[in-house]
Amino acid sequence: MFHVAVREEAPFFAVLDDEGQEVAVIAGYLGYVATRGFSRHTVRAYAYDMLAFWRWLEATGKDARQVTTEDLLNYIEWEKRRENPQRPGRNVYRLEDGRAGGMATATINRRLAAIYGFYEHLLRIDPESLPRNPVPRGQVSRAWTMAPYGLLGHIRRRVTRSALRLKASQRLPRSLSPAEVERLVGSFRTLRDKAIALLMLYGGLRSSEILSLQMQDLDLPGGRVRVWGKGGRERVVPVDADALRLVQRYILYERPESGEPQIFLAAKGPHRGMSLTPAGLRRIFRYHRLRSGVRAGNAHRLRHTYATNLAQAGVDAYVLRDLMGHAHIESSLVYIHLTAQHLREEYDRALQRVKAGEGHGGE
Image (cartoon, rainbow, N blue to C red; front, side, top):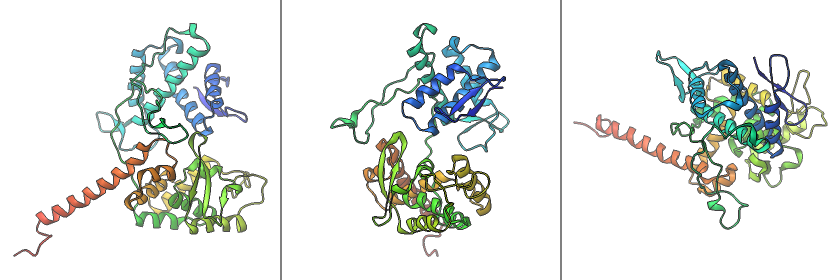
């Protein structure tokens, strides 16, 4: 059975076969992804996407260089139906008997994108190895983008999406209620964990941005934090004073002595004093979800709550885009739409009460 291994050097992840040998063609692809400047998190995602694809190749006895578009349709069905080890969400396919099926639509689409990129890489380095990319190209879309793309940056061409891309339900991001926020944040006991939660809740930082924060990124007098987001994009984010005071207290009284440049470090165990890892951060939130009873209380949900609160307060979509570090304005408009939906839901509930006789004095 193929599996993913972590490496010390770039690209940091490798797919190994049963004998522990690295799959060379995947190694070349992951190396190419890493050299293009994608984050370690992205390389990790691509590694697991290729792992799933390679396991399907092994299960069906197919050669990667002989895969057809029809084969990929079968791969999609396999992904829909295979066992999903994670707790199923609302967007996970379900089998005929009502049981949760395979991967969510967004996960399958991401894996198709990774496979498309894999075959494009093969065609680039060895065009004679296969006749064409088996993942058919879809239409090229255009979108409003962030600077620096010049005067016509708003019509910059985006990466082509696969024609095999599955239609996903349009779910708006769910934010936490004030009561859920209070229970979740109240369950954190250390200065480090509380500071991390407040940076997400009052600064909108992603998990990867939290983990990469360094001392020189803090501007305590100015109440700002310099953040390195997706694609190496830099932004300066204003952060609530309470959150920054917690970060300062953590650095002064709780942070282990270490030569690591990152602010947030492992607090105990054999890795004490080393940079906090994505897995370590996930464990923190997993524990506190159970402790607080807020099952939706993951790190990204705090970022959604930050954006939703700003949208409901009337923040302009372009300001929200810059604060969140979105590459495209559409990502920010989701939260504006969420506010409109919230108003509609409140109106519908009030109307139901009126029709039921609760909104007037009656006879």
